[in-house]
Image 1 (cartoon, rainbow, N blue to C red):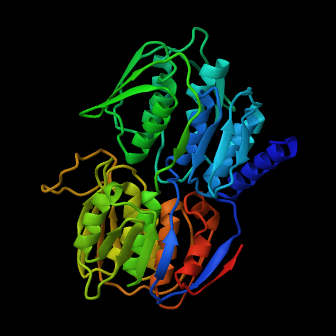
Image 2 (image 1 turned 45 degrees about the vertical axis):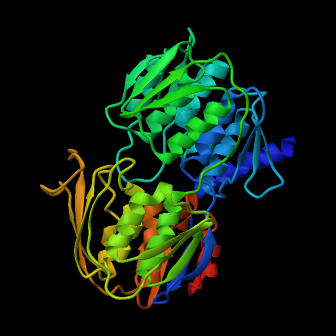
Length: 461
């Protein structure tokens, strides 16, 4: 990568970061038309950036395939370039080559300028402590759907031997005596904290035992990547993971698993608009929990070797009760797009949100469009529940079916933003959706995909 190419990556990352929450992009949707056709989903937004960070641990070049063109990827690429990683695009679409042979410490101000829109920088800590003996993370950004405390991360890093110092500009970490294995039990099976432990433990001296770990498909895919690099990781029953530290790791060659969140979002769009959408690249195993609920609501699907077809078979949609939970439960990222479809179901649906405490803020705009959604900020008691009640959980009751009408709405967060697109596509009349930059964090080329599915809209970006 030439100096000009490196600077281009850094500039692109800054632009991607600035766009999230600070964009004038808007779309005007003429609703009431079913989505029909085929779109493709690539690698998971919840895996690919973390896989790119893992490349810091290797002594040779890593190749990541099936990388989505989303702003989170550009932010991480810019941060890696700041730290001296040489990044080039491969010949195949979505192929990235990452050479970490000349890793160096970046200036704090540069890190802050690039990372303001992403929480990924905290995952740089373990790899940079191994490579450089120090790391810095700025204040973390991301979607405002509830507190995302980094205490789990920092406490785990301390147990590995890191010294954590909180500064006005962020958090500085050092490892004067190196990093060693640790026994860690997470108070909650946090995906991010599990990733932190994995990325830190693989080169730490000795054995690490992680209890109450997240076991999402993206976590397992990250473990597969680390094993390709030379790591020794054992996944035991009951959310226990053992990691034996090794002396060094090499680069990997890996194809990222598909984005199940994007696939579920397009499936929900097909259901809400009474459409028929083939999601190329989607796979059944990682979506089984969603597929069960999709069928209960009244949607239908066909599993093919190259993807899954989702459609509305006609008739009335049915109400359901959903409890979000960590994998293998119903993902919190799935509920927001599905809520729009549930406004078209006949009867009363209830969603218990147990993962984030502020994920129903997007429903205000849906009520403005004609939905009948009541949010209970302290949750609801339900004796039939299977997921353990959490102190901060909320619940939403959706009464339907209700006709939606067009309105002017502003994207609040990633999944809520895509839900607004679905609402606009479902509603009668014209809907104007602004602040689209947030959606680009997790949905690749979503404007072009809407065109492919026959949506009627005007985009101004």
